[in-house]
Image (cartoon, rainbow, N blue to C red; front, side):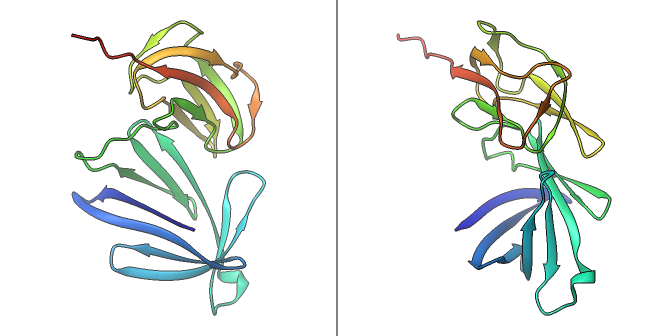
Length: 173
């Protein structure tokens, strides 16, 4: 399994990839730099990473979450915001299928839509509190809200479907 994305960091586009090697070992590439880690998923949505060949006490915990059109990564108490290159399409908290999923376990602070609402691709529909931060989640597509499972004040697990948006139908000419 390999996951690859491009992000803008310091005004330059950087390729980032994570490739599963075997067992709990992963190779992570950020630009030209390559790192190997033992990765263990945590119950709170984080991942404990320990550099291969080093003692486990050199490990650290990382979290990631979509934030509008950007992606936030929190490592060792420091948050990095990564933007999607302008020529790439993307949506925070959702995908092209219009399903907004919880990027990590958290508490729903606000639900700003209801079934039947017409929404824009970049419109915040749910605000989730996780990692002591607020995450505004969007569907990434314009359309009509089909269902809302998120409830204000409720706790959600990582990956839980919060809102489903049906893509906007193109008008026929």
